[in-house]
Amino acid sequence: MLRTEYQNNGMSLIELMITLMIAAILTSLALPGFRNFLDNVKVTTAASQFRSAISLARAEAMRRGVRVDLIPSKGRDWSQGWMVVLDTNNNQQADTGEVILYYGGKMPDQLFIIAGLRDAKPYLSFDPSGRPRSIASSAVPQIGSFLFSVGSMKRKIIIGFLGRVRSCDPDKDQATC
Image 1: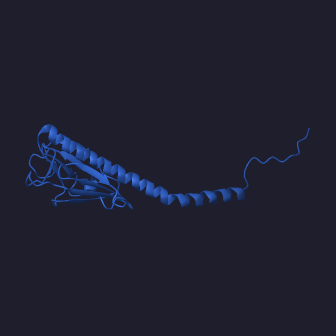
Image 2 (image 1 turned 90 degrees about the vertical axis):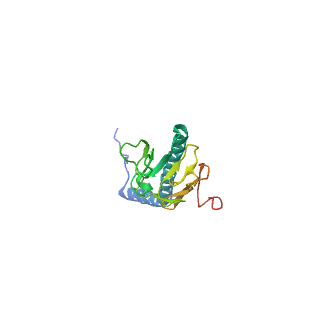
Image 3 (image 1 turned 90 degrees about the horizontal axis):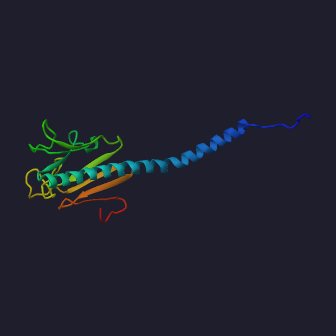
């Protein structure tokens, strides 16, 4: 028996072009939302890692009975990473022979961290009671906040007088952040 039907096993060029145009339009519509999602993940992850480092510094100060510092790993720029260190000579940097308890690596290039601390130097110190302190005196607390931002996404970490840490979204929690 002869087969006379025409079998179409593929798509025509016009059908393929229409399909690609629809896919391109849908992708362009989804990209801004996806970018915001990725920015939110970056800022939330960085703030969470930083908050963990603060908690580690505070816990180690109480456990060891000595002052423990959280400092930027390079200069004054927190976005280059941070370290929890036993800063025996009180110079807010990790010197030879000083114990580094934790090293948080470099953050994504688009991430900015702005410190708003009482003391202008970039550090957090915790005394054996777990309270934040300035480098000059254990009676003067080093309190303030850190603002993490990527694009339009923001997270803020606030360090209180007793060393307790909380985080908030400055855009959503304007009154309490």
